[in-house]
Length: 171
Length: 411
Image (tube, rainbow over all chains, first blue to last red; front, side, top):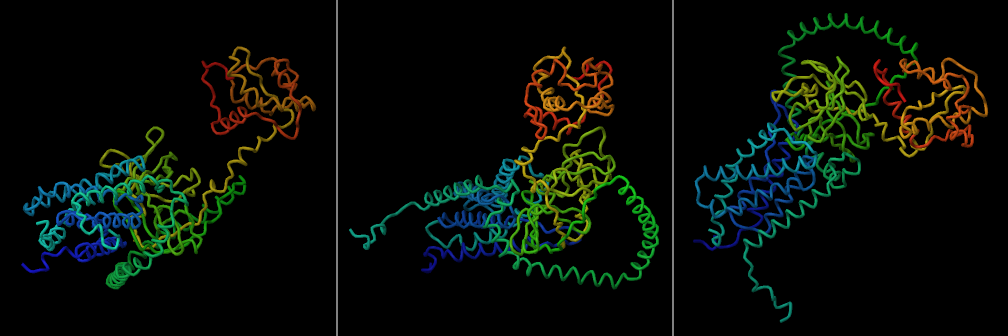
């Protein structure tokens, strides 16, 4: 085992870079493009690092970075301020709470956990929207955001694979 | 031990618990921000400085990112035009032949319409200036449907301005900054748009729900809408001008009436902002409340309340014309057939006028109006009391209907 493996993770590598990638991807998927009359999907990219960061190791910095990304989405998409921050953090809290159950599970099981986390985050958003506007959003429209988001799981899995063994204290 | 020696170096806290505390703190901050947010009010002040600064910073980035897609579309259209020029030319010739007939008809109708307006003295709405802009960002999830356009306050765009594509209504401006403006789409879950069905003139509210086809809510009347009916803005409330095309009615899978938006049929990168100002924004509510009703013309005879009615219900109705009665005491009016009472009598043919009211004399002379006649006469200021104003307003908003034959006489 090399000495670098036993060092704590470099926050820039496992938190900073994924954050920037999520912000860039969110802006990229928000450009007004139509291909054969169909618009681009609008997945919730910050849920990918939210799942991976909770799996890799507990962190003080990660919740605040997720909250910052949530605020960014609120400004980008014009949702109420704090809307995505709360939704993403509740998903992150779910994964962190059941982290010990997920560790060492197969890819399919982890994918299911990821779908559950996305569902919780979107249900939180659904309830907040009802409380905010007094009307429920379209279930179909919610599903069409849920589907592309859970398809992003391979990126979360790759992030977990990349940094899961980097901190020996949390193996 | 001094602080320089690092008394916290040996302090060990469990990282899992500390991370949990961090999550809780962040969630609490998020909930506080949510509670303080006023997005749903759709007011100018609700679009805070943070959102304005973000829009200003994000506009050039999004503009650069969206440029390749725009160029690709232009290039594909150019290639398509080149390849299908002959077929397009043939189709356009047919359309021109058809449109010439429509043009002749439009000219004739325009002339007829102009004469009708002149005869009726109809006040038509002035033309609305427009600003054309380009969409650089588009959010289309279930919880928010907005677009960021590259025209802002420097071009005169204001909060509340309607936004159209070249086909139909897109939404309205909910936030402006220097060089950018945020457009709330008709499909947003916070969007409510007063519309009408062009065929039946039935009013409804277009309710966005995050889907592509907003719902028609609060429909009134028997069978007010059919499949394929044109939906236009009604202009109710003054937010939108009347008659802007919205879309076509269609029955949704859930059995509710929905609208296929015209704006979905076209490219979404260009918009037109109508610099239409919500007239309710220029209304001074306080001034409106202070303004009194105009005095009734001289000679107006008001029918007193029938004695059989309950006194409590007759007081507000009779309080309105009392000052006019006092005014009539100072200047007796000549009997006229077309007064207020005559109009009332024509509206309520089933009611029998009282003998006192049938006389052309002013009501102040009648004994039943003694309390009112004791009030000082102020010809210039019709001192209508608050209940009287309310009664008059209601009478204006809802004209009385002819009663049924078996109905009791009106008060």
